[in-house]
Amino acid sequence: MSDRVRVGDYVLLYHSDKVKLIVRAEPGKIISTIKGNIKSDDIIGLEYGCKVKSSLGYEFIVTRPSLDELMLEIYDRPTQVIYPKDAALIILKCEIASGCTVVEAGSGSGFMTTFLAMYVRPGGKVYSYERRPEFLSIARRNVSKLGLEESVEFRLRDVLREGFDLPDNSADAVILDLLSPWELLGEVYRVLKHGRKVAIYLPSILQVERVLRSYARHGFIEPEIVEVLVRRWKPVAEELRPDTWMIAHTGFIVFLKKP
Image (cartoon, rainbow, N blue to C red):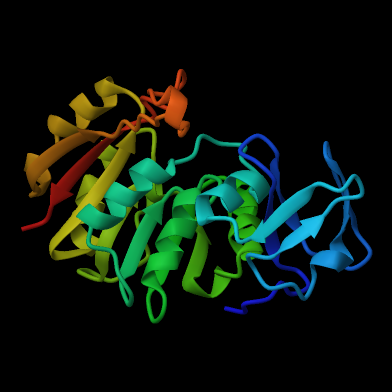
């Protein structure tokens, strides 16, 4: 990773917590902000951490955006996505690491796909299944924006009807973001390696109930139900208190283990 801004890089221009934006460094581009315009040519070649002045004389720090900031800014999101707070726990509990083979159904907007692709590199692969071609196209396009397409193989397939076209005991982890995942548990058991887990993301507790009524007959053990809540605090010394607004419930995560 270069220490300097290169053509095509996404950068975060930071003036304050309320005045910041993510832009792509492109020759000849004029970046408009409420604190004046910035020439993209003035950013290209700068070291990260340096400052650039707008046309009105305001200084912006040039830095790298975090992965979640970047995805929320540049990804198309026609579907509900798995938030970073949930994705992080899934990656930890499913022990996803470099070299892993991970199966995902469905692809949605490619948010979870991106997190998975980041963690299986190098040497690993994410097999992402989606039954709707329009969503598969969006997910593929989103993942390619961050150059992660080599770590992902997208497959247009209705896994609830056709199952996974993968060998038995070949997956280190399976992630399900489907309307009726309990219908797929037998197939998940087939492709999952022994001792590994499936993570099922569900928005409704009624769906969780359906999973709980069916997991045992498919051979899974150790069910765990988790809801991840994150409460941020206002980062001002004189007003140190919880933020007024928070992202609370986004979904339930059910973890099951193949013995």
